[in-house]
Length: 144
Image (cartoon, rainbow, N blue to C red; front, top):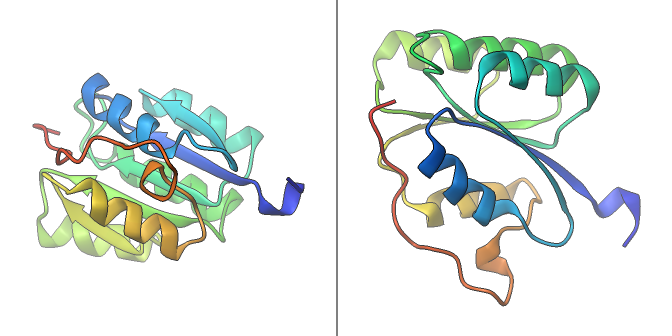
């Protein structure tokens, strides 16, 4: 597999169960996956590597703007990345801020994994749904 076909995926989610599901979804051949549970960890990952796809929770560790900070950093260092925002707080202010920071998709939890997989596929990133091994089809939901 050539380096050009490798996709770098960043998952930023502070809730372990959701992060585990997203890791399972993106941990396929052709992807290099980085999963972070905190804002500092995500910002460090963004400082060290460019990503093709970033999936971030909006609220990280109780910080209302944690996901916005991830998007702001991504806009500076991974400006070509497709950004998917997951949130249980889909108010207009968050939606507008996310759009200004480059998020292409603002998804309200619970989000069906097929929706995330389709958006990732549109960005050229493979998922477990495109592979021979099945992934859980449970929706991604939580209080974040």
